[in-house]
Amino acid sequence: MTSVMSYEPVIGLEVHLQLKTTTKLFCGCSTKFGAPPNGQTCPVCLGLPGVLPVLNARAFDWGIRVALAFNCQLASVMKFDRKQYFYPDLPKNYQISQYDQPLAQHGHLEVVVEGQTTRTRIRRIHLEEDAGKLLHDASQHESFVDFNRAGVPLLEIVTEPDLRSAETAYQYLIELKSIIEYLDVSTCNMEEGSLRCDTNISLRSQGTETLGVKVEVKNLNSFRAVKLALEHEQHRQATALARGERIAQETRLWDARALRTESMRSKEEAADYRYFPEPDLVPFMITPEQVEQVRGQLPELPAQRRARFQQQYQLCAYDANVLTQSRALAHLFEEAVRAGTPAKPVANWLMGEFLAYVKDKSLEPAAVKLDPVWLKDLVELVQRGRLSGPMAKTVFTQMLDRGVPPQQVVGERGLEQISDPAHLERLADEVLQANQKSIEDYRRGKTSALLHLMGQAMRLSKGTANPQQLSALLKRKLEQGQVNAPQ
Amino acid sequence: MTTISPDVVTQVARLARLRLDDHAAAHVTQQLNDILAYVRQLQAVPTDGVEPTSHVLPLSNVLRPDESKPSLPQTSVIALAPATHPPFLAVPKVLEAG
Image (tube, rainbow over all chains, first blue to last red; front, side, top):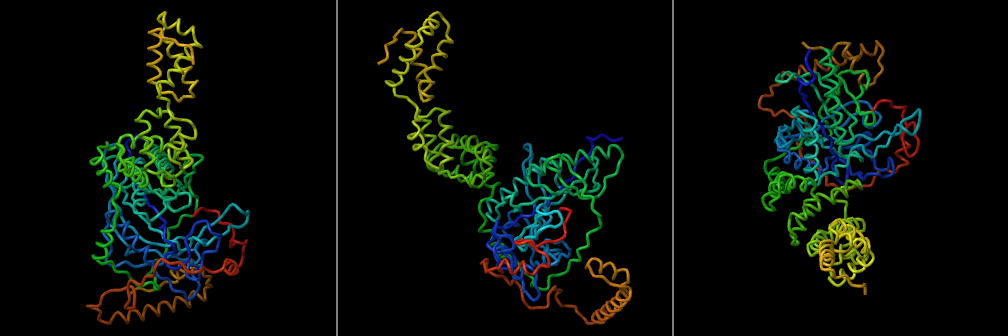
């Protein structure tokens, strides 16, 4: 019997990305999310007889952009094919997709996992149209159909089975999303279905090259779900193999509540899509000039920006990685530094409080209203001793909640730190006057009495007193016996 | 010489959701084999030096700008379906996740 540990997972990922074009892939219907059901369809996307699909130039261009960012070779000629199957969400009974001449092939993407750079080859990237949406829960006997999504442009990005751990798959997805966000071609919103991921996994004995039986896992609605499902599936398959059982080639669905995969229990028959060239669409040439033109328009990508951040701002690899994951976050960082703030405090605010804030509110960094200048102002308020650390955090949260500059929060809430010596002196005197016992304790050598007095004074100032100054002042007064009556 | 067997016809008919009785299946099998025979005749034409293509039109890269056009009114779309539950179309319950 072989032990569970001696199996290596072989993982491939397939991502469907909805391009955020204004209109569908082959017709002028709007792609706007959340529109009234069946209000964004036309004879072309419904597949009524006699219509002619025409490719969306922007989707074509964006496809090339993504293919280049994933280091792919663009096809010199690409064409579309009909993939034929029957399902109620597919109005034409075929999907316009790409079969043997896809947009791009042979790419790769590098991700860093536990300090190790691993390269995942990209098998292909192709354009296709989305299907409509089915609603299963509204009625017991019927499923409802909304065709608004039918015909929306999708880009399918398929890896080779190169991923060797659930964590690598997770990091690959994070890097993919980051690149797409930089390219600004999709909202990557998994809840709205604009980024969907399927995965397949098989196990093989360590050190062998033969692939095991592949299991497809679907119904993954977050990157975390992908990671958990792969970990679960790896364990399930290894346990079965170690017992001498055979793995069935099948599709399994991830159950996010039970945290396990379950067989779809469908009549599995080899899919026969009878692809053939789409006669309504002519071929598309991609010239080297066009490729170079698009390449020239590519923005700085996450990997390049990471390297630059480390060099230009002397950030460590970890900080540079976190700050560049989101384009919006990287932009905030650079703008705040450009406004004249030292890099490290800005990085700390963004990586700490800012990311905690967006996580807590389930927001994307880009959705938060934060002027980079406010960050600079906040850092300065702290550096000049006008805000204590804890107060600055309160101001920061308020600043994001309300979308106003830190000075305004400080002014309105009276949060400014008291550093004025005369003010602190009055505060110290008042506290000492009211705590005669602590004074005696201190003079008898019980130094913890100072902490008690500090606590009282901070409470009295509602946390606004400068703690370093106040502590020094109290100590001086206790040791020199200068306790004045409060004025 | 490749021919289309009645089994292939039955299989393709099933994939295309076409109901064929034995008589119709035999008829269609004959017709498809006639078409194959015709294609075989075409194969006699010398095509050396002719670029393979998936399309007969001398056209490529036909594109349109990403500009929206009016869609059909919701009511007329729903009216096309045999069963509805406005604003949706209705189909017999689909049990399996896609």
